[in-house]
Image (cartoon, rainbow, N blue to C red; front, side, top):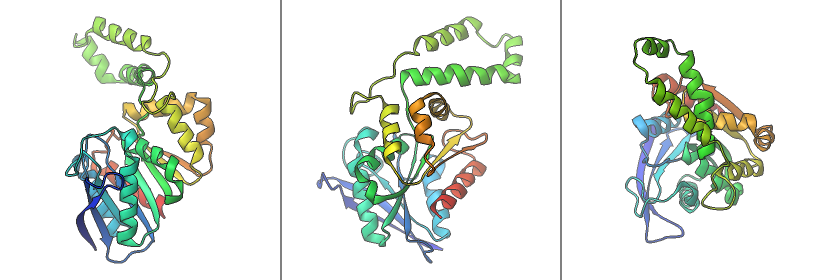
Length: 280
């Protein structure tokens, strides 16, 4: 059993903005650790197919305190929508209010896609406030990285698919268009885009954040997802990322068959189990 409490709270750096949070209080708390779910954009605190809501309730039933919240510009929060690289102050505001309202001092951040990236950016300035990170399909998108993932994974999967060959034999595939698309992606494989924050690329910034974070990190990847494919390719081909992933506190797991948001019940439940195990 658990209780849910919705509330508004002030943005620490922009006190004129009110953010919206919901805390799931377990009836019998079994740990002093609390999970903070960060929203990926454009999204809000319930999540795709109620993913964040269901995750929070599942963990609360098992004695774990969880908070979901809308940062500025998302859901019911005040303010304009902002880039995931610029929400560290929003996350910090949520961390502080979670500590105040629960007495849980060990906070674990959970984020999917660009929310995972936002958690890493926040960790660079507030490592002492975070116990662990749980990062699902981290967003490390560059023009080059996306093109490489499409060429190496998407086209390969299509060629291995019986449905593709059946469609091809029936004339349902535009060969010229497919070849042109492949050529365009190959041409995009150039130097990575630079982040809006620094002259480093987004993958380079995130790699530095992983290296700097000396506490446990769990990466959960979907098997059938281009964002996850791009991350997989990066940690296989980048010397710096290979070094970062060798940290003994890092765990990496893939959920077979899962799409980007783990939309099926079986995939969602596997995420719940992995999350709980890692919190414990």
